[in-house]
Picture 1 (cartoon, one colour):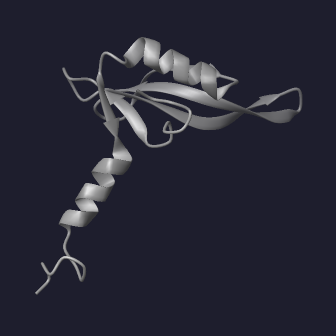
Picture 2 (cartoon, rainbow, N blue to C red):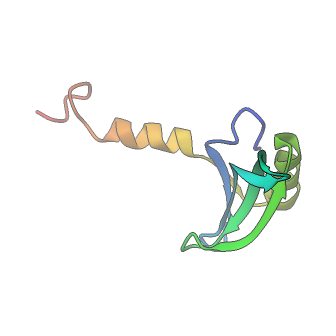
Length: 97
């Protein structure tokens, strides 16, 4: 489940295709100043935007993504990244020699 502590590196991925949903941070220009906001984006297999919702609070974005996409597979990209780096070899693995 995506939470306020893991939203920067976790996504939901569709099991039927390569669509995915993620939260990102950005800003909107409101009343002559920038205002931090959070985007929940549904992207297709080519990383093209299918749908996007904007929230002023992270908690709202987390609630929305979990209610709308938690039926998809939860993916922790940080774990995947650590596994791929571990499998690369190098000095710590003895695979280089």
